[in-house]
Image 1 (cartoon, rainbow, N blue to C red):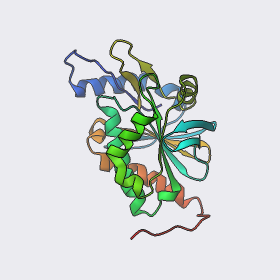
Image 2: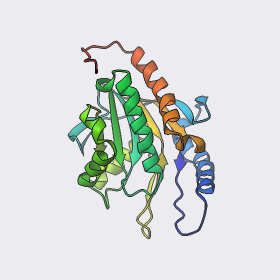
Image 3: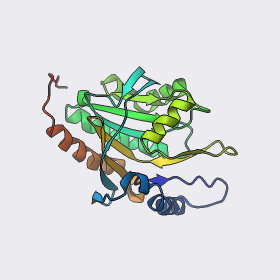
Image 4: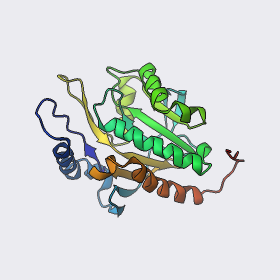
Length: 235
């Protein structure tokens, strides 16, 4: 999958730019292969690379900060991202992009058509209480406005099954307890992964720009799907 594998080289004095450069090189050479063999980017832009994918994914029932849920959520476009709370950097950059996407969805009066799903990466050391506290701290006001943001943590066996299904690379460093992982956004509609979006080095520092690019894709998908329920306009 088009990804950054974040290389957490703790204590080596490696600059973040070099880490990201290495991550890009590693990801393009390896993790892209299972996702995108024979695929080409839908388009590339200064802030993200977009890969068009047509891959069915299984439905899972899993514990989340919204209770036991079945996902992908069937009547919504799902924007899925892998994260863990103790992440030193890139997961929080993903949150910045998510928050910008919450605003895009709100402005478009589309909160009830989108499900934001975080697939947790550290079931060894984290739980739903920690995830919920993080969500409230970072996006409490958006949650009150009706944003559907479910953070999934369940038993390790189920989490591994979910990671495998979504081609999410996860590796725990037993010394540092940090996680090496895929970072980016997976867009699912009607039970199929349709896009994988990976921010560029510049994009990670400009979350609103990445969010606009992702939202363009989501907007196209929504336009292709007739609305089958009444929407309530916000003030």
